[in-house]
Length: 482
Image (cartoon, rainbow, N blue to C red; front, side, top):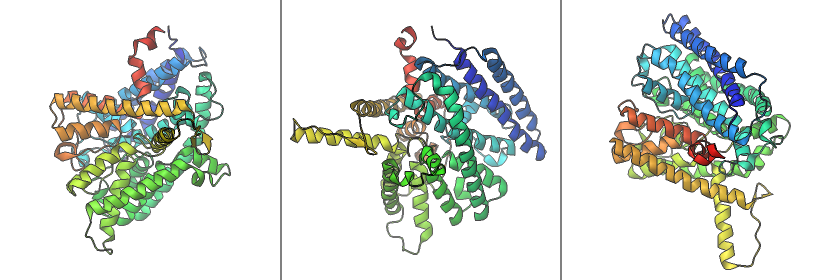
């Protein structure tokens, strides 16, 4: 039987942190004279009560995690955090149902960016800060998991990024805490820099704070119904492009740069592939949006590049309804949803390194067709690429496409039209945010969907954010019986 004490301890610590974080939006509401500060104060009290209770009751009982406990912790912690993060939405003056609140919280903490709030102008400042803070915390959380937990669990080829010191499962909690501390300082510094640039570009201090949190987290929540398009500002769009790209780069390489290895980012093949892919698709986006635009029409070109970067990195900001540009643009943005950024970043999707590994495996198969007795050594960043990594990535691809198909079918059975079902499944599983079409496209939101669809999409966001295996393994009877 699985010993739940270390799992409950970690969940308790995370819930305590979440409860403390709820006090920040309470302060914003109180300063604005909005009565919803009581909502956040009460939510913080409930969350802290449960979190501290779990922490104290399990403190010192167990310091080690087995592989099975690590899998269980990965999924349980995100579900628990979402369940409690939904409380302020449900109790706020917006009067959302718990289904809508859970959807909004899951979208926030998985940095997806899909929303059910129809008019953000009616939302109190505390709720707007809370949405941004959830994405900011979720972005930091996924970076820590990508460096500490997922490589140890060998999820979809993530063993390529094993950090020295994570030799056994028992080292997860202490090493994750150490890494989280260093990352948090870097994360805060990048967020602060983004906020300064946004304010210099013309945003108010409040808008700059919220958008800096959701940009670095590549989450995409905005304070305005028209997203970044509300500002209609070239400097703001350029600032967003730069920091969305920074949020999609491996944070481990940022840490190496801080420790003196300044060329680590330039040497990394994943970074080069990511930037090259982004450049190619940006050119395609410009053609799809403004094939005949004069070279002096810089706004058209920046608008095209902005939306390509936003969707490929999984941020989900929008400046215009890109699904109305052209039929080619619809196909382009659907493909972009699946690509994602680099591993160890706040970005989502399949990730660039998996395309690299898949290409290496394909090249090896082609070589063997022409030279059956040849011995070919595939490499990644100059290191030998083991067959088990190629196999893990190939399996991940098939499972990803299978999960997408199942989710899309479920949504169509629920009653969504074909475009909404397919693009909704893609945007949820890939944690992008906006989908395609009139119902849930970049100019709309998810409020009109039936509750059953919102629960399916919430599950899809979780599965996609935790790299599929970490969630799906829990439904296997062998996991619980062995």
